[in-house]
Length: 149
Image (tube, rainbow, N blue to C red; front, side, top):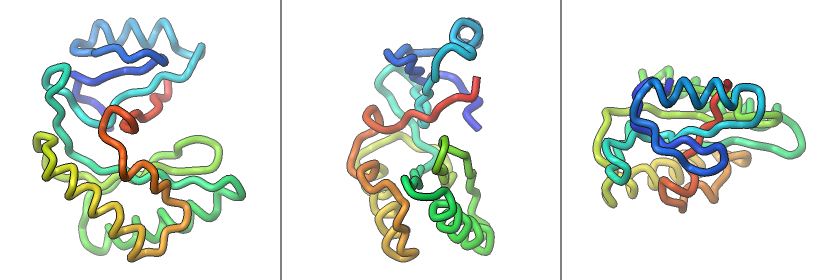
């Protein structure tokens, strides 16, 4: 899902990765020792961000069935509309739901569109498990997806 390079990796400090050699060494060094996080979006340079997906984080402290039912509802709707999505388990009681789109530079306009779609989905589908604070933060604050290494 995150095959292209030029991403920030957090272990927990951020490291800019722009080649496979560095990425492979990082994975070998930290594998099984600590969680490693990767930026959701691609960075052409250390500051030039490209977006090709939006992410909704669905969690529940009570039960994984609540976020499961909600992401299933979202995924079923996306399939009926032929929308490209990804669904990833985010840990003990939640899921990350991605909606994929054509890559474009992250501008204020693109960020506003992503923000609007996230809020609209939450409201339209009455999503209780969707982590709303993620909507209001910029890319560096929230866009880390745990790698399974």
